[in-house]
Length: 177
Image (cartoon, rainbow, N blue to C red; front, side):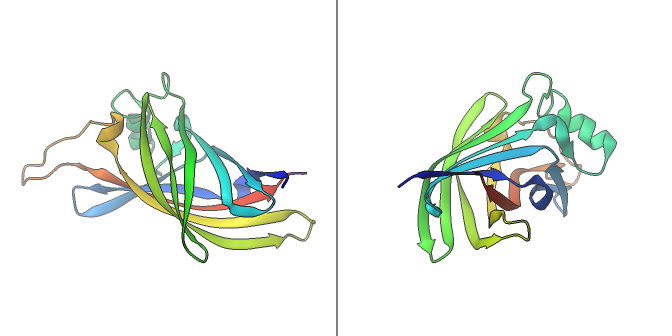
């Protein structure tokens, strides 16, 4: 069967993360510049090989000072490590439209295997004749596994920023001609 190529529709896609702040609330952020591709056998996403790249300098938490700190050597060190990369290694079907997406996540110079929950929402043609497929993805990582170690101890115990980072995304892919 012929390979089908898909590319991210950035105007209909979002990639977010959440971290606990002061151990009592979540702070959310996103990467504004993300690209992704998928290659499938025909249009069968169970066969997909997926690649995602996020530009670390495009991080946005709606707070300029915090964004500056996240871009610094304390966290992403965007001058030295301009991208975060994900490459899928396996897609494992759980139920009808639910999969475990296995892959390698690279942040800074550290690559670790991750498993994400992926939900396939379906495929539709838009009013312009483009074939699009929709997905939701969720997962979590430990940021210190990737050398994102900065933190501050709190007077009452605990730390300023959680080690666990939740990842969520809603993605539309466009079939390429």
